[in-house]
Image (tube, rainbow, N blue to C red):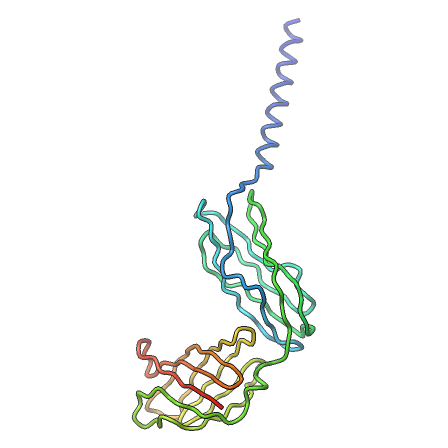
Length: 233
């Protein structure tokens, strides 16, 4: 009789242990976390090769050492993306690479997941449209912020298409700027090249519309003395 009770006691322990392990293995931490700086829409150039860097921040106040995977899901045909493994409170870049994307609006999501955490999906729109560089070509009026004695304060600039989609060349007095345009938000990144041995231009940022561009740059290798060119037409 005692053996029978011992056997039943042993079986009960096994069942309880198994249930505890099962419960532990399916435990989900409901502590909230979030991706910050997610826009509602991103832009790529249709029917071309074009990349869009998406700069994000993963915020998790409860667990600063958690490890997450961030990726784009349900992307349309002709668009791919990298996946990024990041720790809590990291700043990182998710890149969308378009290769002959079909014109129009496409829904996709940015997914953030981690072991024992609730997966979060952020629904966004990918707009594939025309290359905005096409509308920027022509002759513009240019005004420089100064700082170099032989540069005129006002001059003209010829804007032409660059070699890659979404790029332009700005050629003006003694220098040129090669710019990459973000057609989605009206920002640009410039790399200045010099036509004079007296100075060189380094990279800067800026903004643009169809009738106004502002291009920031540094010269003589300085990272503290910023100049800018304002172009209008």
